[in-house]
Image (tube, rainbow, N blue to C red; front, side):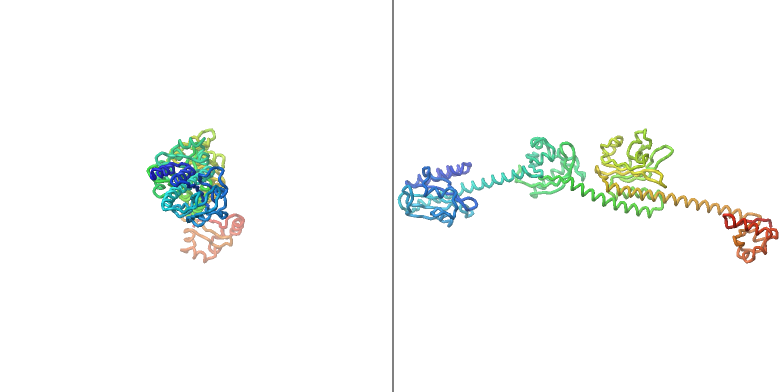
Length: 556
């Protein structure tokens, strides 16, 4: 009989019956085993400060001496044996005590859990003075043990409810997107921040999406999102948690960078994962902006070094394109020069992704042609920088948008180039991020084009100087040939009348072999009398002219 009754009560506990019902069943069980016995249970709150009524067989309203202390009274205010045993965590047996309702004996036994914490007290009363027997103690052990199980379960469920309430409150109010998912089944829940982040109508719409649907096809590292997502989830299941950056996609197609923390919630074949997603677009944008500025400063420095090192335009321009892509973090750069005969912009230097397309490039500077209305043609024709912050959506770039998708161009800049103040070409650059050319980047690129303009002008000036020198050298050589082969005497006289040069015929007439020997003789002593007679007049004519020499010829 005893095992069956206790098993029934344990089953009540196991199936989640209310604690008051389980405790009332235990009190009735005790009373049925001891005629004249009355029982009650007082419970101690989880802070260990206050006691309250758990179960009692006393008629309502309860007798003041027994029940008043059971209803939310301070533990330290307890004067009865019920309070004494809770303090001491040990049984108290009072054989004879004057209580209302004709009760005289009171036994109070603490209910203690497996961690030796007091959960409450079992109080037993008799109408006659008496002490407990071994049979009583055996029943008390059974009842307090089952009561401990029931109360502990209630505490655990209460703690779980509180935890769930706190988690739900956190889940609902969190500014971060929090969702649960299964590696095979996909999303199971999403908080309001999740719905707002992915721009869904409600939680049902979000749950209907697969993890692949809230990610672009490829991640920034080039890997497929569906394959990499499964790998990230498996790492979280294996390690307990995993933190990483991810490119997400909203239902409207916009993409954004996010920090993702995956945490394993349980183990087994139906393991759940909690994902916490935080939009870091602004932070990422600032990081990328700083990185682009840093890279372009390096590219500007490299460009300036190239201007110093490169001896010609043909060497400089390819080096500039290479540096701005390699060090500046851009996708592609090319420089085109205007062919004035055809009004076409011809690529002369290029580097980066998409340079193959330049082989069939058709860019005009004529505004009435579609090929002349793009960024590059407009920049040269109107002599101004043209910034396309969203290349794939800008109406100006429609003829080239498919190419942009193919090569990963998201923004472009077309900057006019000058030589001696005249617009002669363009410097066109492409970035892999939309809105990459902010104000600070624009300033750096404009500074770079000014440096290139300076180099182009310097090369042109040097080319003209070199050409003038070559022409002068050629003229001097031609004149020297004429002088040396002239059959008449040709002399060059300085402004002071000194001999500066003389040809071979003159040396022969003067009967000397070198110019130095001829200079040793005063010119007037060797020239013919008719020359001497006219020298003063000739001298005056020379000194009034723009040259510093006079050429006089006469036959030998």
